Length: 373
Image (tube, rainbow, N blue to C red; front, side, top):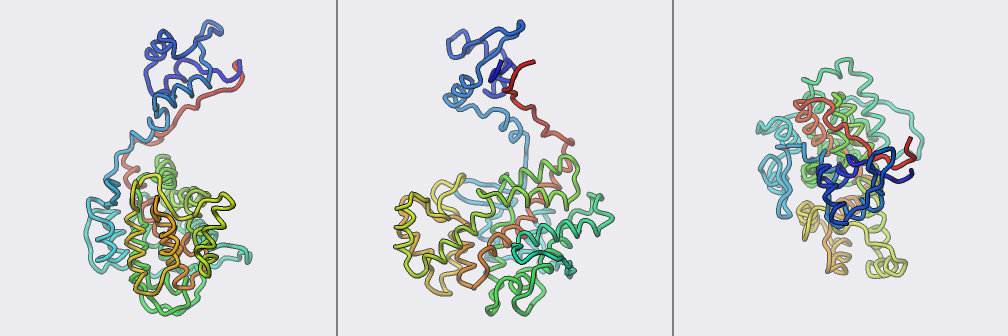
């Protein structure tokens, strides 16, 4: 019989015990049918009840098992191990914040190793994120000790340095910090590494974002750090995650000459304005607020003109990253590259946490809705 669930499957979807499913039947909330002496439930009816009751189901059963000491999202604020991310971005270096997230040890002046430029023959159509993914794979292949999970911190430091060095130069490096090195690969303008440093810190982690979930699932299988990062990068490249900043950059570039006209055209065609709202934050994205405040001394922002037209919502980090790229003549996908390089820190931090948990703990059971045997 098609589109039918067993009692256990219905219970998992509804987030209740099997006995509660039968209670729903007795109350007329569900209809039970007998198939080979087994109670079966229509999947559409179960789904409708799940929507009415706000059941969180199997996904919640997985995420509820994740206990983390890395990031806290609370009251529209973000904290790394109890410290405000905006305060960290204003006072610390990316390298020191990364070490703090990995180890809970506070440092000042920590240096990452000199990266090795990884040669890669890629087509002209390759994006910066394509280069990052290939660099991670090649760095992994060149590390015979990659399966030593105890080396995760040193592996992460070297990997971030290698990834940065593998991006093509567009300027002259004028420092040894990651922000200095990365600036020379993203902008031809005089360096403003303190702004890029702030952006990297703001993006280093964000609780259980979808890419972080992918990284943790990989880590639960005891994947090495390179594979964990590859899993995160795969999820990040989804249209609803990391690539959102590139869409916002293209919109701002189009809107630069006529912001009001660009917004009006979007509204006329029924398209949403990119770079606004968030699934977690309710009234403000603190990361966007802080980064935009860092950009305003460098000139008028087209993002501010767009924000004025959106009084019922708020700008998110995608819009702020897009404005960063536009202000300093970075390529349209520079925001994706900044996002990816920064988030390597969080993925590795979550992987190190996951390595301490029982392996394969996220093995879930699907809710089969096809033909019954």
